[in-house]
Image (tube, rainbow, N blue to C red; front, top):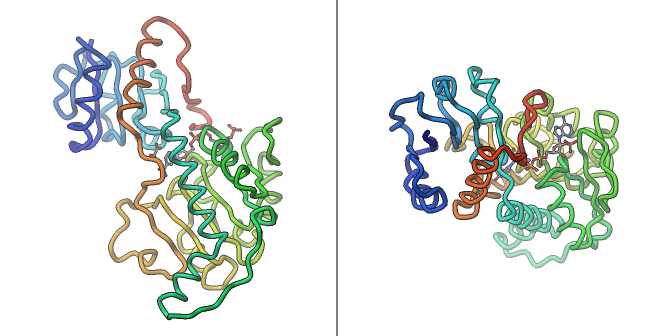
Length: 309
Ligand code: NDP
Ligand code: OXD
């Protein structure tokens, strides 16, 4: 019985020192050194190459190294018979809440404008709303969206969230499904995307959605690059319908040097750094999932392959 770890080679050397202590005595193999594929029962993966998972005939459980599983489901050959567990780690959740709070505060407090003024040595105090008067909408109300909503609420923002199914008793205004989409857009001066990438959410941040936001709204996308129609964002910024965007994720990563987002005055780029997987805490969670699976106990955070998250 072997456990396969598959990510980029730099990650492998970092993870080796985390996985071996929490899985003592286990046969852990680091891609591309797979050995006999029939011995691999567990695969811990980030962006596995196409066909890798299908080539493991006795695979029992796939563990995502991230919260998202789109990097696994993007492989048309992924073995449908094998359950997939995604990563839910309080360390990552806290990191995402910090990122969202930081970026929402930057937008709320007109940081881009003050930076531009500083470059021009302009001393001009801008009219400023209070957080309670700033309506923030969060797309995706799961592990990350809920925590980010609570953090923003604690800062005093007027927060609402959107999910696929109705959510009750969360303490923030909630909207659900296609019926609730226009409603959350209509009230979101700052829109934060924390959705998973699925066939339903691909391209959801598009011209039609931007047109339903209040004029001059701002966007934070920390979900996936595939959520955003890039040309529509540029057009909405040019027209003034959107005033700014903070982007952490991109259709092509790393963002190519020639990409217009790099030097757009109303776009802030971060390199998919909002909430990186933290190996020390994640290793313990992955190990716990394997142990629970082996003992026949329920494994938390299994994904639904039909909805894709
Ligand atoms: P969860 O699965 O816990 O939550 C997903 C949320 O999205 C749920 O509220 C779900 O609704 C909602 N949702 C899914 N599909 C739809 C839809 N079609 N319409 C409306 N709502 C929908 O995921 P996490 O919160 O853990 O993670 C979210 C995403 O964040 C990840 O998939 C990943 O893409 C991204 N991420 C980015 C990172 C970064 O560093 N930039 C780091 C980590 C994650 P419901 O509650 O009804 O199921
Ligand atoms: C994730 C990510 O999905 O880092 O965990 O994007």
